[in-house]
Image 1 (cartoon, rainbow, N blue to C red):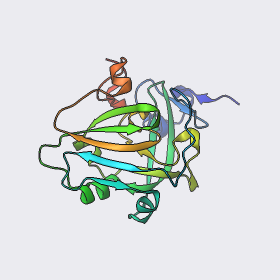
Image 2: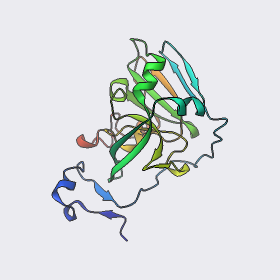
Image 3: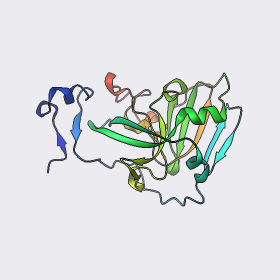
Amino acid sequence: MKFFTKRDQLAPEIQKRLPPNQRLAKRWPVLTYGPTPDIDLDAWRLRVFGLVEQPTVFTWDDVMALPQVDVQADMHCVTRWSKLDNVWQGVPFRVVLDRIRPKPAARFVMVHAYGEYTTNLPLAVLDDDDVLLAHSHNGEPLTREHGAPLRLVVPKRYAWKSAKWVNALEFMPHDRPGFWEKNGYHNDGDPWQEERYS
């Protein structure tokens, strides 16, 4: 079976859902820089710090006790594949914002993950109703390869902004490039504008 379907082989209604120069993935590709971490849930923590009124360290039980939602959203990778109709389960990012209360000067967030991976996003992009911290995909817990135990999901950006293995959120007054942004990727990563590389 071919891994991808080219745009011109798809029905028009599906073509409309693909950003420019994307192909439809039939399966979910695994793309990772560096080794896949093996994370102990008992030791895992999500630290939220920086320009927030309530700096917080969440345990896994804390995260699972927060309000949970399902979000159906497509995923678009900078390497030119898209996976449609994903159903993500997790904590809305806005729930975290309500708990930690960003200070007025907070305008950007650096997302930190295992393996010293980082990616940067404007707070205004994260403060959206389809952004969440996901622990499950299509009714099953995330696999390690796809970011277990927790990954960020930002559907309106290329998938490298949806960091796997998230363990900290740093609220900042000014923007600062993350790992791929320092290495030639576009700072914003909007797939509909085809913001792939700087």
